[in-house]
Length: 244
Image: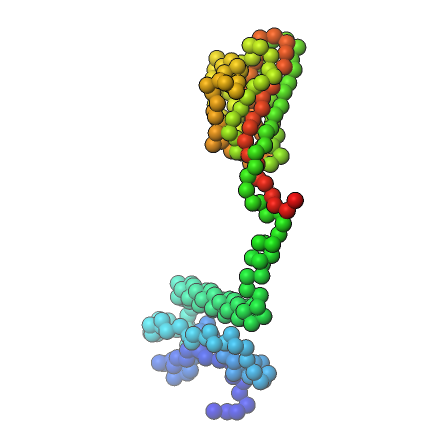
């Protein structure tokens, strides 16, 4: 072998059956760490251990595969398949590289004693929610004549309902529906007298188990037979944070 040749890598080489000329399939060319500038640089990256060789799917050729100059014609279907195989190998190499990098980071973290440090910080934060505590949300509206009324209670925190009362509403007030966000949790087309929701009424615990995220609205729709006030109060719980 001539020593003044520049190494380019590995490729499939064929012989023209008519002329005996050697033909190099440049599409199958694969560089190694001994090829070209890498050889001159005197070293290689450890990622080259992913090299998987060349495609071994060549099925031979005949005279019809050669053009007028004795070179192989490039079959579009074979080129597409070759590109797909290259893409699969590239993805596999990338996956192995990321896996090795992840392993190296894990070993560094273990060597420097960093494992679990973020979890410890979270455990020591004073404002981590520890549980739920009792709370109440309310709204009221006064109207000057008989008609319907809608109360919108905008929650400042997550809320889990347990009960509702309309104490403070004008006599004869009717309750038609209660919405948690866009979800109807109770409704009556004719309405129910607000008095049945009193402390000694039989509608206690109507909203128990209903919940809504902070920032959303609880809507209570009702009506009054004349001028007066319509009031709704919901009893429930909200998240309680530690660190007073």
